Length: 150
Length: 149
Image 1 (cartoon, helix red, strand yellow):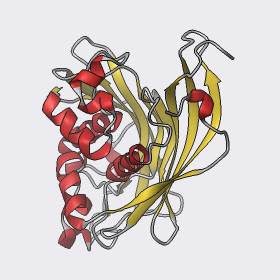
Image 2: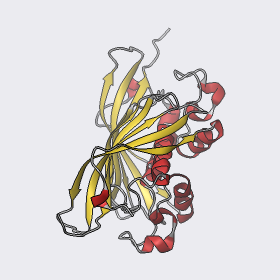
Image 3: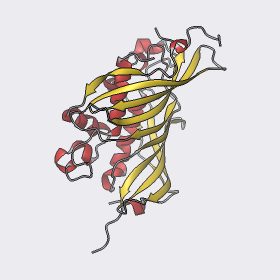
Image 4: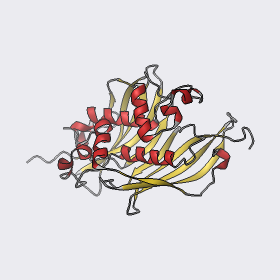
């Protein structure tokens, strides 16, 4: 199991990939983001996007799944207090294949709770053309292998 | 139809409450965030959370759905370039009732595209105890009202 101490700084790690189908894009959006350019392929053609695109939240949720599947720093994870600078840079379209790269930028042992530490991760999501489609900076809370040791 | 011009800094809005079930927490997490404390009661009880909690991404999905149903569906929304800051402040648990409150912070016409502008707003989810559980500050692009013929 990979603990807080085991995370390496500035060493990018790659997830697997996932291809989003039109049906999945519509299914997610009908539940969580039913704007017309996410659920109606015909109407979406008239939008500035020129066709159906995935909800940015669906892209983020897919990236989360890729991170959990790759067990990137997940086993000792206690979740996240939040993130900054989530950017949706390019549309994600049906048939696009997403993959993510995660880089730990900094780690901080908790002063108040010796059994945990926090880590800041740069998360970058790419499509099959290696275009950056989404970026965010997430904080994660992790268990420590050796509580209290700095 | 709400256009860019209809968003005024200082505007506030409270949305109808939204109950969260264990079934939907688990269903979302199995697809998108299958960490043990989101999908397995027994495993979750052994974590500091003491029981199943919603994925933070599920919380944001519930927030977005409310925003679409009550604002964006009848507005000239052109999507969002992103979120400046997002905080998951307290666990969201099965049976919680969440109330969303929104506040418009800023409305800036686009310099490069005269047909649109960018609105910055804050959204906060409160649970039934009045505790803030999730917060985000982000941007939405809205089309400007078409000129009268």
